[in-house]
Length: 408
Image 1 (tube, rainbow, N blue to C red):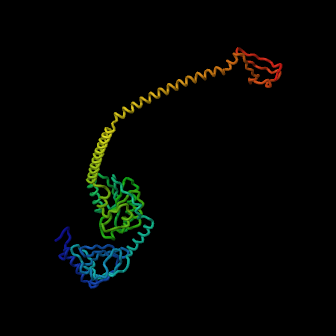
Image 2: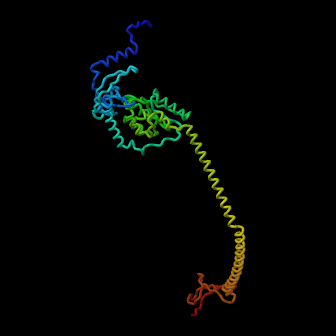
C-alpha cells in the first residue's frame, strides 16, 4: 500500500499495537516494576475511593501522574496531600485507552512540606501582613454593568463559557476580551499586563479574571505576586473564576469576589433577565399592596374622623362661638367709644393748657421778653452791664435798647 510515492512497510503498527509495545517495555522493565520516586504533590482528587494525583519535582520542571487504588489505601503510611513532599514506591503502568503512563502507588512516605507549598505560604503571609486580603478592601460589584472585560486566553474554553453565560443572562451585553497566557512561565506577566490594559482602557465597569479547570500545578500563575498585586491595585472591581470549586489561589483571596469557575464568575457578574423581571414584578406587587393598604388605612381614618366630627356637634359649637364673638364685638365697641371720648377730653385739656402757657398770650397781657445781643433771655439785672444792647420782644414788634442804669 503506497501513497504520494511513499512505500508503507508491512511492519507498520496500529495505535493499539504501539500502545501495547510501550506498555510491555515499561511494565516489564525490572527497574520500573518497583521504583522509589521523590516529589511534591501538586494536586490530588478522590474518585470513588481511588486517589489520582500529580507528582512534580521541587522546581516544577517535570510532572508525572500517579494513582492510589482503593484496595491499596489501607496499606499506605500516608495519603497524598497537595503541597506536601513524599517518597513514593510504585509500579509503572500504562493506560491503553488514553496512551498515558502513571505510577501505581505501593507505598507513600511523607518527606515534609513541598517547596511550592512553602513558597506559596510565605508569599501569602507576606501579602496578608500588608493587608491585601482584608475584607475591608473588597469593593461592591456594580448592580447592572453595561460593559464587562474578561482576562483569559482567547483559545480557552473559559472564554466561550463566559461569553455564552453572559449572553444567556443579558443578551446584547458588551463584553471585552483582554487576552493573556494563563499557564506556563510567561503567564504571570501576561495576566498582570492584561489586567492593567483593562484598567487603562477605562471602558469596563467590571472585570472577570478566569481560567478553566486543570491540575493544581496548572494554576500556579494565579499564585504569583505579580498577578496578586495587579488585582489588588486594579481600579475596577474584579471577579475571579479560576479552576474548579475545590481550587483556591491567592488571586481568589485578593479579588473582590471569588466565584471559582468561569461560568460561576459570569453568573455573579450580571443578574439574569428572568430574575430581573421576577424581581421587578415582585416589587410592583409589593408597591400595589402597599398602596392598597395605605388607601384602605386612609379611608378608615377618614371614616373615623367623620364619626368624631358628627359626635362633636360642631354646628352647636359654631353657634355658641358666633354668639360669643358678637358679645366680644359689643364689648370692644363700648370700650373703644369710652376711650375715644376720654382721649378727646384730654386733647381739649392739653389745648387749653397750651394756650395758657403760650408766650404770645403772655406778651399780649403787657409782658415783654428781653434778650441779650447773643439771644440769651434776661431774667436778672445782674446778667447785663451798663452800655449793653438788649432786644425787647413785645406782643407787636420789638425794640433794641441800651442799658444806662441797673437796679438790683
